[in-house]
Amino acid sequence: MSNFESFFSSNPSFPGFERNQELLNCFCKKNENHKIVLITSGGTTVPLEKNTVRFIDNFSAGTRGSASAEYFLKYGYAVIFLHRNKSLKPFTRHFGDYDFLDMLEEDGSQNGSIKVKSESVKIFHPILVDYIQAKKEDRLLLIPFTSLTEYLWYLREASFCLRTCGKRAQLYLAAAVSDFYIPQDKLPTHKIQSDKGAPSISLHLVPKILEPLVSHWVPQAFVVSFKLETDESILLTKSKAALRKYHHKVVVGNILQTRKTHVVIVTNDNSYDIKLTEWEQKDGLEIEAKIVNDLITRHTEFMQ
Amino acid sequence: MSNFESFFSSNPSFPGFERNQELLNCFCKKNENHKIVLITSGGTTVPLEKNTVRFIDNFSAGTRGSASAEYFLKYGYAVIFLHRNKSLKPFTRHFGDYDFLDMLEEDGSQNGSIKVKSESVKIFHPILVDYIQAKKEDRLLLIPFTSLTEYLWYLREASFCLRTCGKRAQLYLAAAVSDFYIPQDKLPTHKIQSDKGAPSISLHLVPKILEPLVSHWVPQAFVVSFKLETDESILLTKSKAALRKYHHKVVVGNILQTRKTHVVIVTNDNSYDIKLTEWEQKDGLEIEAKIVNDLITRHTEFMQ
Image (cartoon, rainbow over all chains, first blue to last red; front, top):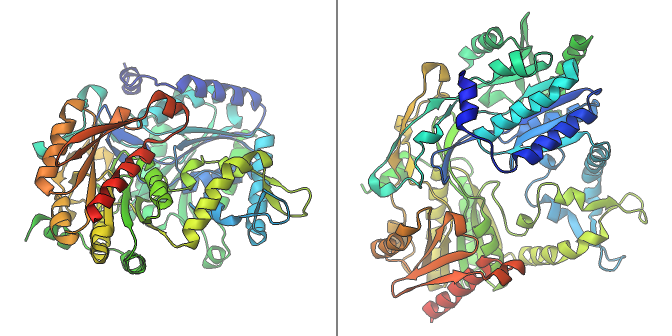
């Protein structure tokens, strides 16, 4: 049995999976003649106990994925947004915790009604319009995950569903997925007790899921993976190695500290930077607008 | 040097601390003749790398802390809400990701304005009114943290500020704080690489901060700690041991699986259950209403 097959058999499906499986199926069937993208976003958790109180997490607010989803929608794609529960989401990402409540007031002119303050309408209106349109056209499907196991089950299922879309499917794998985990049979049942001293945790490698994904699950699709490093000197080498190993189309490489203004697009033929100029940053442009634009051009060429 | 002193000297303060230090100071001065509660809420993170991509986290959505904050406000307390960034917060906790956007529509009767749909006003109105009142009276201060280090620095600072409030201060320590961490000098600088095999992580014990808190930082205050276990057989013993060790007033004990309907209040004299009946659950009553009510009664007795 291969690595990833043994992962799925020893980390079984979970309550709620079948409902989302059905949603994925319907959404892909409905959009099978459409350009469609699966965006993964946010970090996965890896439990340290069966009754999970503690877990290892990967840093990711979901900024890149949620922003990118809006741009794909804008360019007419149907979007499956497979995201970490509570991470940033398209449209709502623009608002902080209390922004919504702070924007509202009782409407003096209409008894018992509440309205958006007139000074906030300008910010609110375009986002609300885009959101309502995406909903009306049923072009956005939101699937939340928390753990690595949930993420991998949904990723495989979404890939199976996308097979019918052939080359029209793009996979934009921006989630920060754990490289390590603790197998079920090695997990303690209860919360680790601190009065027994500080524990050591032995981690195991997560099977490289890009391998079956590219070669078996969605062999026709346009697959884009992301690589985040903190050490610039190894980024390009690791991105190229990933392309050679998994045979997909693009790696978007980025460095933790500069990821909001600079990425490098690595393909089998070449590599080039996408950057935001200072002027663009001041103007509020987001680098995801440029990344998505670039990848849609490449995806369109690939489909022809 | 004691354990906790060496923690603070080897895990120094961070950008943003001074600004919040000032806010805490002002808020406590302004409310020094008032009943005041410090609520801690949500889980702390423990970085596994200096340039943090991975971290260990504690499970906590912030449900207990954010609900409790609303009840303390209702009973006239000033509230410092020291919470994990992005965890649930008072008032906004009632709304899911897209609830706000889904409640809004363009107002046909007033050109270019947006209103809350009439069917949603009923849910929205009482929450908005309470929120606006708490803001107008300046009785709610929100301080966010992410890492264990941030949490401990703010907890100590808030305690120092609360000293002037004497017995009128309650500390309601509901945050899920890590028992383990990796000291700064043992952290790798860069992201742990998976091609070097799966690592083992050696954890160290976090100093027990309740000790200096109760005996030195806020010796006059009414301190309540929380204990979450997954194994019911050890809950009461561990709660009583905590009271004996740290000499504070109350431990609220709870079991992960039943924490929304059952807690046990443990004091130096006795212990008793607080439960939600099935009827109360159906009626939408929250257990935090009962917990806060109970603790306010005890705090009032303590002040006299």
